[in-house]
Image 1 (cartoon, rainbow, N blue to C red):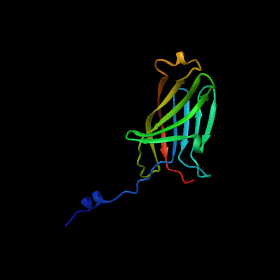
Image 2: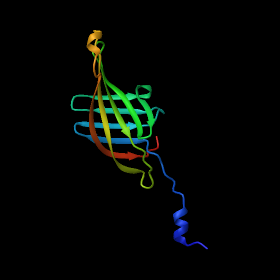
Image 3: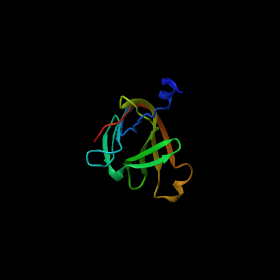
Image 4: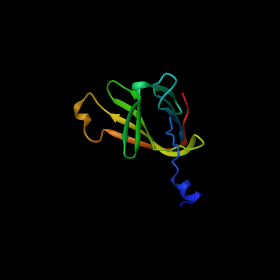
Length: 141
């Protein structure tokens, strides 16, 4: 015979996976959604100087054991490299309500490149890590 408490402990909870992340830290504001009304992911990057919007295959994702890495290119030059921003999206199980606070990191990477081969020696990626806080939510698009 089982008690009500034992039965409650075995109950399965209908966890939801977030599809919207709204984060901020330092001078950054990030909004990332895994889908949208048109069925594509979207990513808005805002810093003190610019607001950039990305969608679909402009957003690159890689699932790893530490979370999902979501990367966009925020600056591109022909002859000196580029700058990318990567959001580390942690795994989050949502119950009720459909949102939860999260703490994560954003990584700005300067990819150095020169058209002069001799200048491409040494470290070519430089990183700046920004702590981010905000919410992960489930929204029906």
